[in-house]
Every structure is written in structure tokens, then in C-alpha cells.
Image 1: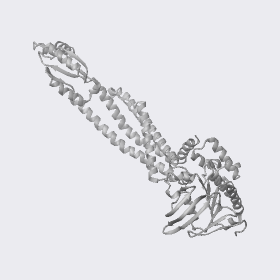
Image 2 (image 1 turned 60 degrees about the vertical axis):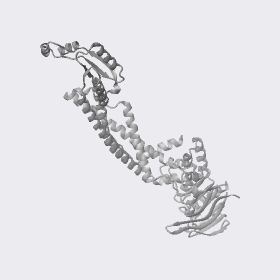
Image 3 (image 1 turned 90 degrees about the vertical axis):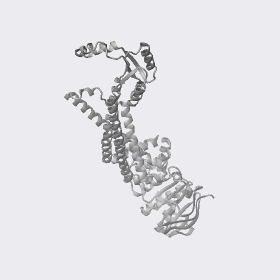
Image 4 (image 1 turned 120 degrees about the vertical axis):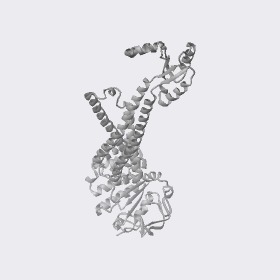
Length: 229
Length: 299
């Protein structure tokens, strides 16, 4: 299999404290990876580096064959178009409808009106919120908002989907639903990386788990459904 | 197409969201540019007035007394082929005397006492439009003065020089005030854009995270700045036009300075459009300054 993400001896310091320390790992194309660790373990730093929001102080990062550490600032937006991102706080535009929020990545890329309509409808259908496309995000439940955020992340068919604490604001039932959604997206060929400190998430996946502790890659293992907590 | 609509809609949304700031920015820009406009209007009208006065300026080339006819004709020929000369009209001694009698009938008896006609023959020279500036005229007069058969060259040099000097000062003032107040307009619009940027910081972050380029993020703010500048400029022209018409009405009512009424005019449409474009440019510059300072949209 091909590695879609490669971290080679990556280190990053925040205020003289190591956020990531000599992390080396490879993620294959089509994998589903859980990035576990408590708050401050370095999960978000790692994800931010994958979309060029932060640069490592040491080491190299490759995403989809491109060395992220060597990208010029003008090239970073094009990297982000290949890597969808889902956030704990959803980051939806409150004054735009669900449809317009999901259409945004396509508008940014200059997609045609026809393509936008088709792809947004497909993405909303995939996350099961197509019936709420004309509503504003604030009128939706937190679970629905997270689904809209996922729809926006997958609407332009990214090769990798990153999710930073996507279930942090959700109850166990909604957490299960969102994890099922990620599995579905992964089954369609997208590499999915979910960063979480929520051990309950392990109950819903039987995939590769990478654990970070204070910026150090502590372990890698594979868990089966129901094996976690 | 949707991308274009999106960018225009975003610029419009920015202005609507910060309605008060937008209105204040347009008004202050309008008054600032109106101040520049006053100087510009004064300058343009004075230049026009000077231009039309210069059109009427004729140079009198007086000939030496008893200059043979052939030499006078040769001189006339020489003047006519001069590229700086538009028209040459010969006034003989007799014609000069006749004109004197017509213009000053009560004093004509004074000349009769002298016996011989004391008035010299002359050429009335109109210079070509490109050479009617005080400097060009002065140079030409100095050259003709040395020509054989020429007794004296006369034109209202001092008065024209003073007018040119005054216009020069107004021009300088217009440039100085223009630069100063344009910088003020750029700052006003820049601050408005800055407020819009700060208010939409979160939105900009979202756009960056989904792969929007720096240009895509910046375009609505550039548009907003340009629109604010254009609106401010158009409004300043409205204020100026209103003040100008009021001034003209006052002249008509009071009858004072009635001579200048026909000489003054407002900016022609082409200048008005140029000024709106300049306002647009200043607004754009305000956005650029603001975006550079705040640094939003950096990937």
C-alpha cells in the first residue's frame, strides 16, 4: 500500500515545551486511524501540521506526496483542498444556510453552479441532513451541526479527512452516529484520521490506534469493535 | 460565476454588517475629498480663465519710422513663416491714426497740431495656441525685439506673469492639500476595512481552513474599499456641485462679479468620472494598507 501521510522525526516546541517530540509515523492510503491522547498530548498540533497551519521545528512531513514543510504559502490552500478538516467547534458560518456552508469549498475552487448543486446535495445526503439545507446552522442540534461540518469537509472529495475532537460536544448516541459516518466515508476510500481523548470512541472502531503522550508517540495498536473501554 | 457573486455578496455583506462605520467612512471621505475638490475647481477655473484671456492677448510689433515698404513686407513675411505665429495683421501709420481718431475722438486734435502723423506702423501678432504661455511669449518677444526694422514690441507681460504665478500657487496648494487629504481618505477607509477584518476574523479562519487563497479572501475587502472610495468621491462631487450652484446663484442675485459668471464652470463629465475613479483608487489603497497591516488572509 502507498503511504499518504508520512512524518519523519517531527518535533515541535511551544514556549520551550515539546508539543511533539521526534514523531515518526506512516499512514497508508485508505486507512482509518484514531489519534488518542489526553489534552495537550500533541494531537491537534499534529493535525494542524498536516494542513500547513503550523510548521515543525524539526523533521519532514509528507501529505499525498508533497513535502508540507517545503510548501510555499501560496501552495498551502491547494493542499487544504485535498485534506478535509472537521473541528470540535464546527466552525460553520452562522449567517449562511447549511447549503451555502457546505458549498463554500467548491465556491473557493471555482466549481460550476451545476457541480456545486450536485456535490452539495450528495454530501448533505451522505450525512443525512439534506432536509435541513435551507436552515441556518444555529437552528440545528449539535449533532446536526457536526454532520454539516463533515459534509463541508467531504464535499470536494478530499483524499484525507482529519477530525479534531469531532465528538467532544456530542452525547454517546450522537458520538456513535458520527463515528459510523466516518467509517462510511472511510469505506468509500478516504483516509480518515480522528484525534480524540474520548476513550469511548474506541468502542465504535476496530482500526489502528496511535497514542500520543506529552508529544511522544507512545504506542500503536489495532483494536476490535467493543474492545476499548 | 457563483464565485464572482459570492465575492460581491461578501463585500456587500461587510458593508451592511458594519452599516454605521460604512456610512461614517463615506461621509468623512466625501467631506475630505470635497476640500480637495474646492482647490481643484478653483485651479481648473483659473486656468480656463487664464487660457481664454491669453487667447485675446495680441503682441504689438511697432516698426521703425520711415521703414521702407519692401523691408516692412520682408519683416511681415518673416513673422508669418514663424512657427510660433498664428496670424499677422499689418496696421499702417494711416490706419493707426484712423483708429486713434475713432477711439479717442476728443483728443484727435492733439495730433493735428504735430503736423506729421507721429503714430508708427505696426504688426498685430497673434501667437499660435501652443505658444501663448507667459514664458513662450517672453522668449518670442525678446527674439523679435532684435529684428531689424522693429522699434518696440509691446504686450501685457506683467499682468500675464502675475496671473501665471497665482495659478502656480493654486496648483501647488491643490497638490499639497490633495496629497494630505488623500492620505486622510486612505486612512479613513483603511480603518473601516480594518474593523471589518477584525469583525470577520473567525470567518476568515474558516475560509483559510477550507483552502481559500489569500486573493480570494482579500477580494471582498478590496471591493469594499473601492466602493467606499467611489461613493465618497461621488458624494463629494455632489457637495461641490451644490456649493458651486449656490455660489453662481449668489453672483446672479447680487450682481457682483457678474463678469466672471460666464467664465466659471463645474468639472466636465469626464473629469467627474476620473475623480470617482481616483476615489475608487484611494479606497482600494486603503484596503491594501489595512490588509498589509492586519495581515489577515495569510495562509
